[in-house]
Length: 497
Ligand SMILES: Cc1cc2nc3c(=O)[nH]c(=O)nc-3n(C[C@H](O)[C@H](O)[C@H](O)COP(=O)(O)OP(=O)(O)OC[C@H]3O[C@@H](n4cnc5c(N)ncnc54)[C@H](O)[C@@H]3O)c2cc1C
Image (tube, rainbow, N blue to C red; front, side, top):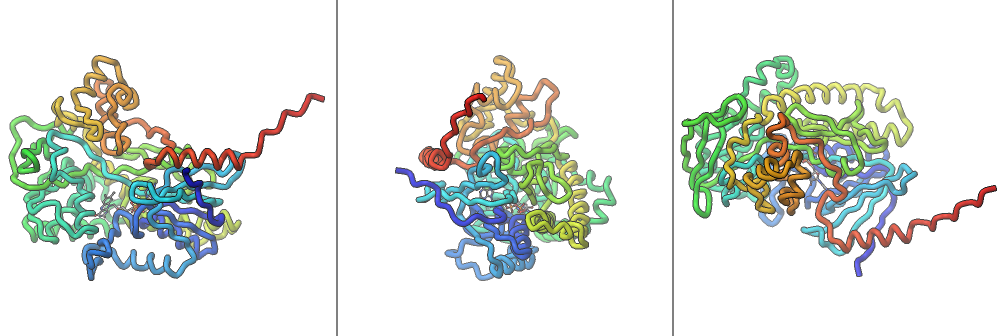
């Protein structure tokens, strides 16, 4: 018999995600006297940036792998000193209104590694802060499913959390500011990095001197990574991409080709580089399932992905639901912290009816810093936006959806022969995007292939998904039973006078 969700007290605020944004939002709101619950799927706070080695690994100086650890240490101190109820290992699968007509929210979570923990959890609150971060955008190419090919952020996670390297000789490829950071971490941790292969160039930044001048910390960060790469003799190849991975049962080499402005490979430019691992990623994509499930409006960012459309104080288009960090557009850890602080302030102002909190100097400073960093994030997104020619890397045998093993050839057939024009129709015809990752890995690629030939280069707005993480059917059954028990019987209609 499935157990029904366990309830705790009702909170003022529930925060989903204990990365930089969620931590900052939770502690700031708690310091302003709100009762706060903070839920995160991971075992420890810190999110994608402040990853810690598992305690069993016995790392004595985890901060050595970070350049901004003191900021996290301060957030963690504030968390420990606060009354925030921190629920680690809680995978939130949906957020709903407590009752259709109320302004209370119910957050439903499962526990356990695969969401198979004993008891589902329900947390009620008056406001929600979504700080669920982002995931890596992957664009497929021949050989990308061979063992030894890992995500660029995944390689970083292996170093920071597992204290292991993905290989001894690792090519880092894709696009975006994460690549130099990952290459620098790998080289510092002892890997040989023969090349960093960036599909765009860096000239796009130079066209925005104001954004550069007002975000010197970003330029300084890039200079530090650049110096590390020089010290380790790592070659940087811009306007190039890995267009093929070679090897029988794992990576043995990659082919790197020059790209034209649209990311089409230039014929005859392929060069082979020997390596035993490839760390590859094409930027980050905001993780919006919970938000779109609630109906929050999205906006298109400069790199073609979708982010939440937020007001000046971080509120979404749904009253009572706020967002901070990468959910509002990818912009880095400092921006995430500032937005979290601002959201905490704004939520306290609303719930405690203290408008002075958002009218005061602190809120104005936070907004100004947020806007400055958002301007840089826009420049960064435009500089690394995937070019429409990337699909020329694919041959018909390349797996695009690796969960369901759907090849580029089958997707092109669904488009050319069966008239599919969008990712959803391709999914119905081929099962692409129907597997365990629910299209997180292949979604961009499938949408681009479906739009080819109609001039469409951008994936459509994200679909509304009622389940953000996989949930067992019995959990849904238990939820339905609870809802049925708690719903008062419908009144018989009054007879007409
Ligand atoms: C794989 C990866 C690697 C990165 N590496 C670097 C790097 O090396 N250097 C760098 O400068 N930046 C890096 N970034 C970017 C950086 O991590 C972000 O800028 C920063 O972490 C943003 O903070 P955030 O709070 O918005 O999101 P995050 O730090 O991503 O935090 C989001 C949190 O939400 C939780 N969460 C998400 N969905 C749910 C759910 N349904 N239920 C419960 N919890 C949930 C996650 O467990 C996570 O802890 C990386 C990003 C990714 C995705």
